[in-house]
Length: 519
Image (cartoon, rainbow, N blue to C red):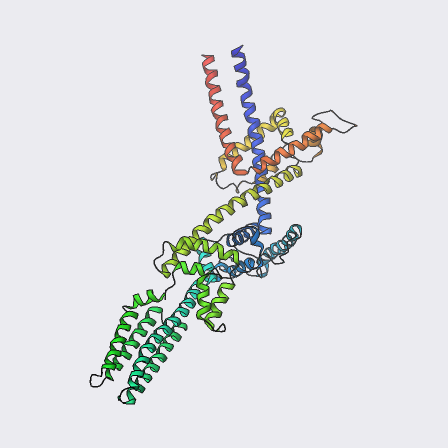
C-alpha cells in the first residue's frame, strides 16, 4: 500500500508542478501587462513628481496639516524655480516631441482639479506652479543648496553683522567722545592754544567719517568683516598718533588723555580676532537659530539698534525672515540646532547645516518612498483586479482548465521553460514579449464564447436559470487573480524559476527511482 501510494504521488507530482508552473506563468504575463499599465498611468499623471513635491512640502512644514498652507507652497515653488532644480527637469524640443508631454500635462491638470474637488481643498494652485512638469527625483545636496539659497542665510548673517558693526562703531566713537570731552573741558580751563582743541575735534570728525565709510563699504560687500575691523583699528591707530603729535611741552592734560586713548585702543583692539569676538561681529549658528524666532532677544536687539525702521538693514532682515513660513522656521530651527553644537564658526556652521539638511531630506524621502510604495501597491491591486476582470482571468477556472487539458498545460509549460531560458537578465523583465506569447498560446482567459461556456458551466447549480455559484466563483477568481497580479512580475518570475528547478529535480529523482526498480 505504501509503495502504491508513493507511486501515485510520483505520478501526480509532475502534474501538480505543471499546473503550478502554468498558473504562475499566466500570473507573470498579466503582471507584466499590469506593470506597463501602471507605469503608463504614473507617467501621464506624473505621480512620482507630484508625490515628491508634496513630500517636500511636508518636510518643510513639519507635518501634513501645515503642508497645505499657502506660504509653504509658495516657498516650495520658489525652490522649484531655482536654476539647480529646473536644470534637472529636461524637456524635449520640437512640436512632435512635445505632443506626448502636452497630453500628460493636460491629464495632470485635469486630475489635479478633480483631486482638489474631491478633497475640498481651499488652496487653488497648480501642482507645479507655472511649470507643466517637475523632476521626479532630487538629490539631497541639490535640494540643500537650493533651500539655503532661498533661506538666504548668508544675507541674513551679513545683515545681522551690519547691525552689530554699526553698533560697534557707535560704541567705540562714544567711548572716544567721553575721553575727549573731559580733555577738552580741561583744555578750556588752561592757557593752551585754542587750535589744539580744534585739531582734536577735526581729527575726531575725520575718524568718525572713516568709520562711517568702513561700515558703508561692508554693507556694499566691498570688504569682509575681518578687513573692516582691521581698517577700524588702523584708523584708530592713526588718530592716536596724530593726537600724540599735537602734544607740546609735555602737557600733562594731553599726555593723560593720550594714555587713556592708548588704554582704550588695547581694550577695543587687543587683536582683530578678539575685537570681532568681543563685538559679536560673526554671528554663530545659535544666534541664527534664534533669529528665526521673531519674538527672540536677537530680533529685539536688531529692533532696538535700528531705531529707524525704514533703514535698509532693518528692511532686509525683516523681509528675509518674514518670507519664511512659521512651520518651516520651526523645522529648519530644529535642524540648525543640531548643527550649532558641531560648528566653531559661522561658515562652518552653514556647511554643517547644509549636511544636516541633506541627512534630514534623505530620511524624509525614504519615508516618502515607503508611502509611495504603499500607495502604488494599492493602485496595483486595483489595476490587477480590473485587469483580471477585463481579461476574465479567473484563477479557479485557470486551475480547472490546466488540470483537465493536458495539451494546454504542456504548451504553457513549454513556453514558460522557453521564456526562462531566453531571459538573460532576471532584473529586467521588460524584454519579455507578452504580445507574442498571447498570440502563440490560447491561455484559459478572455471573454470568448468557448471560455465562458466552459467557465460558467463549471458548476451547474443555478437559481432561476442563473449560474449563481459559478458567477460567485468567477468573481472570487478575479479577486484572487487581481491580488496575485499586484504581486508584480519580478516576484512571479523568481517563483517560476524556483518551481522550475523543483520540477527538474523531481524529474531526475523519478528517473533514478525507476532505474532502481528495474534493476
